[in-house]
Length: 312
Image (tube, rainbow, N blue to C red; front, top):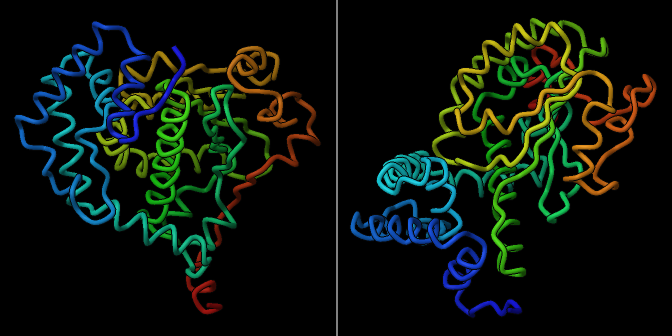
């Protein structure tokens, strides 16, 4: 039947999810919702404070937590409680509001560092109309970014992207009556020799991900639909062994490790992304084209924070 969204956004979200999932899964979702109500989570500070969303009553949100725990409502409730506590204690909604304002104004040294040496970029949209980002860890100096801009700046930058993706997924759901709230990710792992110290930079990135992986897993479960790791060199195996334990088990089967040649991933990628969302450097192996790829990343100079701070 044609989709006509109820006027109330929460009611519309529940209707859209019901149209999308199987009856058995929806029954489990309603069971989770009953547990959430019995726990009193509708009144949780992460759902009622200034700038917050009623996450405990959002069908799409509850669905992600349910799926992350294998369809078990009690386990999903436990994780949701942890996530809401973290959101309240960290004051994520307030911090993200302040961060977005800071980013838009380009008014701080840490924002300028991330703008100049960032390694995450928007490619376009997937075939379902949701944003697709590329993370070029191969070019990134994550240790340098953390040293100069601070760990929280990088974390807020990444969390703002995730929150924006989920917001766009909600809008699409209300417009179409179909719930898709997971995303295609692309990670460029190629060792092109354009930024020195490939392995040392990789090792220096591990502490950041080790410290913050629990946040991504606990607070934003089931957000990954498919994750491409492209142009993985042999040397990457060393770093991969360190990172793999940080990846949730239910995410590992969504990861597609690919070699250097674009032909090893292009057909799979084209099934998920329209042509205008796949840039030339992901379509061919031409050295010149790859050298022009963005974002470039690069080594972050020591003392850059103070230098940028003095210019503001």
